Length: 392
Image (cartoon, rainbow, N blue to C red; front, top):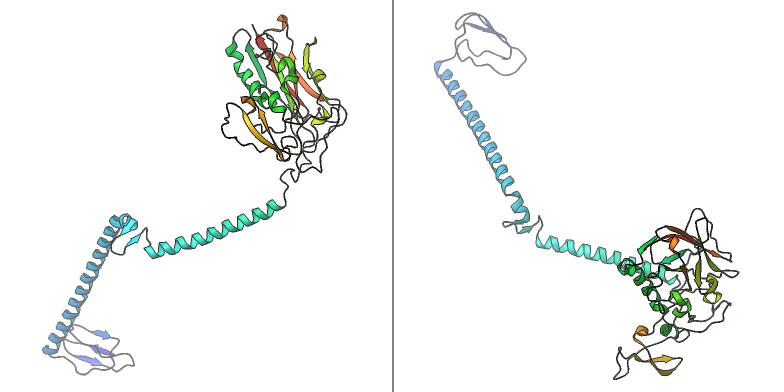
């Protein structure tokens, strides 16, 4: 340790800490230096002091230069970041320097597309294979699971829960007539003549037959509600016809003698007329084997046009059981590719003048068989409810 008592008088004592200390200016008063290990002399020459001052000035200049350099670098980085933000969206779409599009080069995009092509191609192949395996276990004609649809529902045509019209204005009920005509096109007599005559009152069971036959149900069976004698189906007279049909259920064989019964929800009876008589659903139309299983009655028709024939003339040659016949058919028959048709029941409401302008609520049910018609959870199971209002 060194103790200085005057302007240039110093007393130094050696210690065990660090290097020498340099005196850069005269000292006034006592001072204590804690770090030097020795004192070379009691004072330094002016040359040494100048040299030390120069070294300190050089060190300060270097520090200042380094600080200036760092500040310049920071400013440059800030400016570069600002420029990058301005040009980032343009460079992202297409970078002219690197040739990147949307951040990727052409080779990178090619590899990505190749990967996803192989990946999704594998998924599509696996999906197709599993679907093919599943389809091998299914029957084209009969659903695999059908135990939950044991009883059919009823539907009506015209397809409306509320049938309201003015009998004196044909525009009021033309759309109802159109719906009935559309339904009965496939029941035309000319089409049904290509189907088979079946035994009345007997099930048409054909489990072992590869091609299931179709029983005839001619439109003329509905008589006044067929639209043939009366093209307005009774709507012009205020006595509308409602056609009821039962939904198809594969394998359904109703027991007993099923028929449709309708009642009006009012105090007095509402007179009605059924077609066919008593609203019967004949057993010969059961069981149903599925749309694909039923062809045009045992005949598997393959229509083709003979030279000189035209659809307008209806002159069509068909192959039936290995031999050919020529049939003169009407335009309504078309190609005569008739399908299975379920039996229909038409109900004509014989309204009187007192019944006009009053809404009539009618409920129709399947009766006479084991088919359910009183399920509170399903109001359309074996029954249907509709309302009719005819105004003058």
